[in-house]
Amino acid sequence: MLFEPFEDFGDVGEIAARLRESDPAVRRLAVIELAGTASPDAIGPIGSLTEDPDAGVRLQVALALGEFDGAAAAEGLARLVVDADPNVAAAAAASLTELKQPEAGAPLLPLAAHASPFVRAAVLGGLRGLRLDAALGPALIALTDPEPGVRVQAAGVIAYLKREDALPSLIAAARDPEPDVRTVAVDALAFSRHDGAADAVVQALEDAHWQVRASAAETLGRIGLVSAIPGLTRTLGDTFWQVRQKALRSLGSLKARTAIPLILPLLGHEVAILRKEAAAALGEMADPVARVELEQRADDPDPEVRKTVRWALGRLTA
Image (tube, one colour):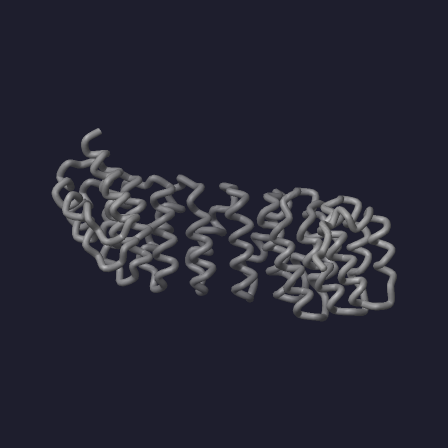
């Protein structure tokens, strides 16, 4: 027999009554049904089971609260993210990232200083999307946390806030010993036109880790830093195609015609996405000098490359 739609199971009160059943399987199903109603009235009954003796029920509560938003949902998730069961805590951490309403921040902010690195990182991950000015202080403190995972999330919070007064800390984070932190920090610097921020991103083009170099190559295009064109051009020789891809995109947006001699050979690269990005960059530049090489790629075996080549050639004749 097929399940009926959730709306046919009855109102919130009728479903919530089953949360008091002794069988945990019944309680779990009731939580699922309550979440399916999408009614704000369901948040309270669901949140009442955050201390249920059955870990499976608590896990379902953590998942269900991710379907809601606001302070009440955040309060329940704040209790579950410190749960002794790692699966419950992990589910709560994932649900925290779905929060978007600013009022959800109040229950989370105190946990940014929790003794557990997992909790600190999870809470910062939840605060990131809320864009709360009140989260800046805890995030700046967390940028010096001994745990790299916490520092990564802290940089993410600051990235969303885009506050100039956080620049010194972000620039320092771009030199963090952990590459994941440097990657996020470099990406976060895209909002600023400050010389110090630009210098930090340019320096990141020479980072030992390709993820950081790729982040830097992309960020320079977003900043619109024309003075970075020589560095981006050198990056076209990077050993990782992912870095070359980001550099091509930025060079295209910067209309870096001086890079054309190094872009043209990439039209024949074995990696299709690089051929596509090379064609796209040349199209952005719209320089007739690339016509012959582009025409030679009109029959590229990859359909996305062919489409981009046609677009680029159209730009040359526009």
